[in-house]
Length: 395
Image 1 (cartoon, rainbow, N blue to C red):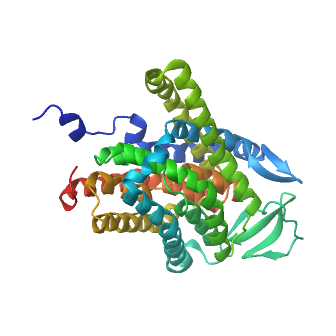
Image 2: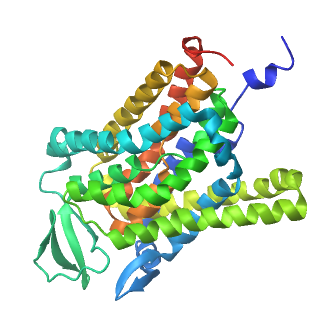
């Protein structure tokens, strides 16, 4: 065997976090449920630690801190100077933008609406309801209606009572409009794709999210008769995408100038990895500590949400992979172009759902289910790519 080829052909998931992400998520479910039973007030207390505007909680401080440490290591890895040179790979970049922003959000909405609002409605419960936050700046009297929700008083706070399936739909929407910018680096690597191109597409999608995430999210939530908190959507993009993006851009330049590229990659990024993992797992424990009763009362809830998410992931992958073949892309470009559309930016989806609808909402639970199925489904698609390399031009 050629020794030069061995490292490329022997790509493996070496990080214990990436290898066992589904296991860690399951353990977080168990830990969260136990925490909710033993100390039910902790999650409520933490969720109450928020920045308020006109008396309405807008930003959950614990979630904001956790999400910053999840997002910052992703952003600081990106050399945004590469975006300028992306024109050399025009077709794969165009393909991923087309899939992620013109197709994926709408197929996610349609698939989730069909399964959650029609096929599974009987098992979810047509009369089951969920309490979500009032949209920022909205002050309606008790008993008023807003979309599919009704304003009620819960523990002295005005909340919107919406059908539970619509709350799950909201979480699916927020997943569907969030193209992956983190784990896709792992999926592209394992499928022997073009790592440089993957980073360029991650950078472009991060910048595009600043413009389109709030617009598409607000539009699809409105179509689904769900609260459309425009101000909160814009604030969430600023906090969960723009802030770590700007921090990553400037700190990367400063650190490389002061310490050099080698120290930056081998020392600084290595130190950040466990911080990212802890932040994600703490967020998941908080979410499940509040949803434990729902899961124990109906343990198949996760399955009902997982089915449309699974179908959406496979559909978008097949569409992206098929279009890549029609465009005559090299395999090394086709694999990451399809992967970045199929996987989701669950970190931003989790943060946005908790900010818009609350830590205890069905929307937050739906985004966490996206994390749960991410690794096994994407590993399956990696294997599909590796077995179909002959369909494409080779590098």
